[in-house]
Image 1 (cartoon, rainbow, N blue to C red):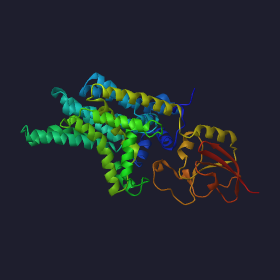
Image 2: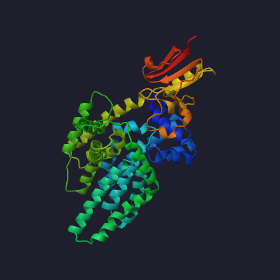
Image 3: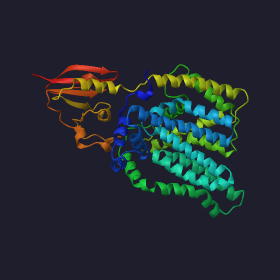
Image 4: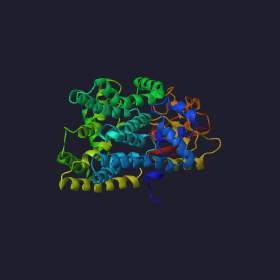
Length: 451
């Protein structure tokens, strides 16, 4: 079969998730509570593995199903707000968005985050802008889906913030213009948010612990204004490099300008806020404290762009622009799908297993990145060599055991070093490089003792 994203080797964070999701349920939750993310994705993957196994295909299929679910919810949401034709446009454009499509095959929680957040907005619009007689049911639905979004990723709080601002505007309108009772109106509008908080209470101690870990030092640098503009561009046209990127950006801006905006309409305001608020708020927070500005953490804002671009269309120009975007996005996504860029770790492991002798040792060289979780997932024992002492906190540290890091090199006659860094930095006293095998950016360097 031709190379494709479903069969691509796992990379570090994906392998971390896969290794963790194979552990017993309560041990898995205990480890997740000391990491940087909530547990819903790991729970989903844990039970998915029990049915479909833990192959790369199974892992990537789960995320792809989440991505399909996001497109389906976009269809339902657009149909509820406008009509079936708009709904079909929204589902197609959301499915094909190059940035979202990239993470449709990622064995992490990002496609789940997009799904649960979009689902919460569907419940939100139904609950607060839908038919009156169904409001209670939809408010309950909203509370549940908002909680699921929070259990997918902490950044879902920014989506709930947007939703809360919309409800606050409704509250002000009802007490000032409709002269309703403030107390009764507040309770009627706010109880789904309190119910969401109630559902999230079990995870609050872990959230506090995780926030303290991140405040103690995280790997993200402070973004400047160019980073904010670049992230906006990425979400609209994708992160890939392709010749038509400027054209796609121009078409997108043109579609936004041609839209029949109704900014007095709450739906338009909320859609715009859904897209812009997470980006701007995380950027501002990152100026004042530890940076949290990272593109994939905010991809749940992208579905709003699909709804904005396809709704309130002008008769001729808007369908033409949307059709051009869809055709270009199909080409971009097909190129991405058929040209995996992740390192071929599976081939590296096959080579190591073929060459490794019983007396050989393996280590992961702690360069710009290590590959501990890939080696664990693919069945190699190769601890991280860290001569400088304990490793700093980062994603995955919580799952490490004392056997996963060594501070002194093994004394075997031959040592296999796994790295993606420069070969010349791999040096151990008393050893010389006897063989180097390269798999794209990945390397296995065999060191042999001097005689």
